[in-house]
Length: 142
Image 1 (cartoon, helix red, strand yellow):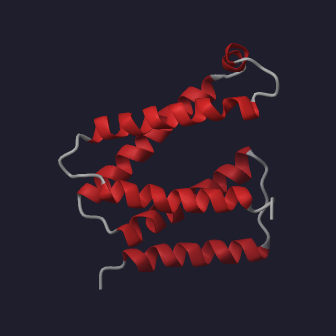
Image 2 (tube, rainbow, N blue to C red):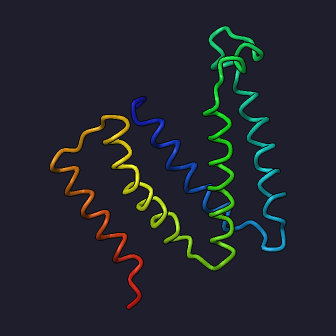
């Protein structure tokens, strides 16, 4: 069960994420709304830091970071603003996550293959084909 815990956490958190973004008031400034979310996230992660510190103080922990932590922060801003604006433009909560995540999965395949030496089995490739077909069908305007 411990093996699946991180995936359960990401699924539950992702569902809550989309629900909370969809429920964000339309008159709330999107950047201030996200700033409040990031402030809450910062307080929560700093409160959890002692449980993952491995004996390191926070100053030493910051010294061990590199550019990727800051680049991730920018990517998160793009992700959050993109989803929030998609909902404000009328995207359906039942589709926006599926469309976005399917497209991301398809784009990550060549990145994983060429830069991280991932491999795909024939069964994985069949799943990729179904993912692509599903993405086309979900976006089909009948």
